[in-house]
Image (cartoon, rainbow, N blue to C red):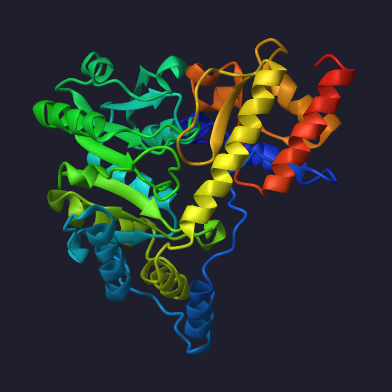
Length: 380
């Protein structure tokens, strides 16, 4: 029999939709966050060169020294903060970075505070660490941006960790510096670990991004090359650890992960050192796609009344049409448009679909035209 832990782990709806969509011809994929731009050429060349040179052996579980140095320089250049390479543990994707952070910071039965809505997989990571999920509700009227006062009603001396995400998935909300600073102060008063998922950094188009590391050294910060470098399938992430947790995280990584692939680390290092001078154009593309979707959502009656400021997601209120799982099925099967049912992201998204505009502008326009036609001729 599967363990209770395995039974309690829920499916990831976006991947279920992706699998179903793969069985249908001519689908516009808006169910997963898959950037449509290619990785930097330097990354591909460095990975290929590493393979041809036979660089396919184990590395340190912490990651290669040169990659960790590049990541350290990234934080200095982008945020003006000093992150010693010794505090960085490289992982095969940012999801394993979150897992090792949860296992290092949370004891069985302890509370971990999430926002609602939240990234669909967060509760499962908490449960895998035998923690208990508590949530802070987000309001679309506030742009789904967290309120420190609401956290103060939930976080107390018994809270093990608060898990933050900015720019946010599935909302696209971006936390301002005052909010991050206030949450850090609350964490310090209650001896709560801060775990900040910053994997969408670089993709804020209507707000200024801040790393939690600008306000404290005592935080787990998760990031990777998937989103801003267009390298989702490379599976390369990292966690910046609070000083007292570095060895604990590394011990867990040694046992559970061994190391990230060496040639992928070479490619990631090249991407990071290459920089992101091309990202302003990407952000402008995302802003245009967002606006196309928001205009359509208003016309369809799906508008939640907020404007995503980063990442590449928008929540669409389909409550007037019916159950979001049913609506997603009709959109996929009758219109060839794949979106993810909102209940996967928490109670606050239970009437919604999450639409990703990471796909091309042409595909976003095509999806809008297909849904226009569907809603004109049928009742969902």
